[in-house]
Length: 115
Length: 115
Image (cartoon, rainbow over all chains, first blue to last red; front, side, top):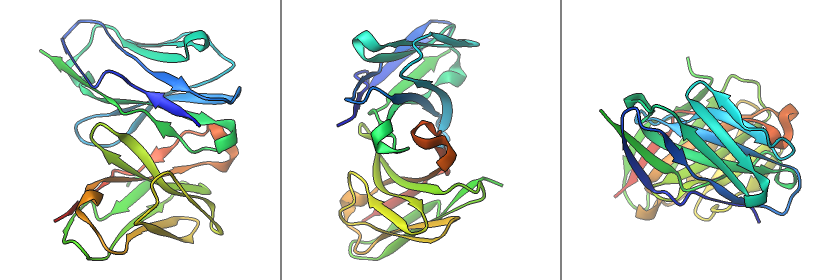
């Protein structure tokens, strides 16, 4: 069965600090996708990124970067030079080929960026 | 207007009452989902539907039922609400063409409180 673990329940940083959100997953499938979603205080869920299991290249998008390592079953998310607007709950999620497009979500990490 | 619309956005009800949460989408997607969010537990799948004639239970379907009235509409019912069903409920859609890699598009959420 698929499982996603986000061990960091809450993280608090000061603006301009770098912060990494951890995500560890479990799956028996060789084909799967990993996702990150952001939930700002307004409550909506915002898609950030999708990676497939065959592409371990790290990805950078502005201040955001993602490190995918199959050897450790991790898909960590780093925010560089954090800003107050980054304050949100961040969810990591997994979709297996055998489960169709059903996503399994981690518990979420509450990130607070203080001015 | 939002592509995925949920009604009501907020609802307070009493134990034992029947409640229906409605979801409609204009994205033309075949697949629709109902998730429940609880603090510290992330999002958990209640029911999903891959087309109008296909309804499937998710990981926490007990106490819930659904109806897929049309491709664009997917309703979640609580036949006899209980306090531990107090949560934030999300409807989501995805494109069949995306398969298990497909991004989920979420509604804005329906906050339900059962007293």
